Image (tube, rainbow, N blue to C red; front, side, top):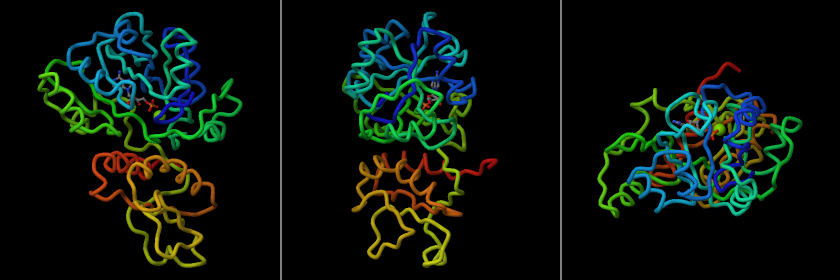
Length: 302
Ligand code: AMP
Ligand code: MG
């Protein structure tokens, strides 16, 4: 199903057998828990405890690209949460995702609709590239608007919020929304809590072509080069081996096109890819892009 972040591979979150098929289709390890998609807070409260900070954040950002990790209730099958006591919940804004959840009449567990570890899908064609023959249908909702996975924040422990995955909604956004309701939490990031962030692997979102971050050496930009170069913004004199995330360096546009550009360059026959990082001026969304790029470039067993 399309969502405003990336395409998701959906199953009835209350049916362990259906959820097992997600893991099989994606070849996803069982220790990487799923995000459950619901329409609203009322539906969320059937699945998890919903303390005041969670209510404040849901009021501010749902429907939208924010996932809340909360203490789960027993109706949620163990397979969804990788046997943890918490469940990740999100209310998507995409109209087709919302219609699908409404028609299904059940919460939908849906991780990104790609083989485990590969670049996330932001079009229906991307989904078929990775999962054709392994899934029943693709609901085509066009290109995903945000293009980057949701911000994940763990609010299951009193007095603190831990950002497990950076995304379009920043720590500052969270702090302001909490303050509006008179709540002051300690907000920290997952780096110091690696054990709390299952599935947040050092290498992930990876093209098959080796990827190096930073400016490409001059030799990578000559005519006979076998290297592809992804620029942050369109170069003054682009070469056939160049791509860019946004013509004028707009961060939302860069997030929107990041995975499509990585995929296109991955199948263009290059021996190596170079990708420029988001500049500091790109703000929190730029940091989220750099989080994905760092994982995409991390060394794997290829
Ligand atoms: P995906 O939907 O493929 O982007 O992956 C969902 C991610 O959400 C997982 O890889 C985890 O990092 C995170 N997640 C899901 N459930 C939990 C949970 N109960 N606690 C912490 N993180 C979670
Ligand atoms: Mg994923």
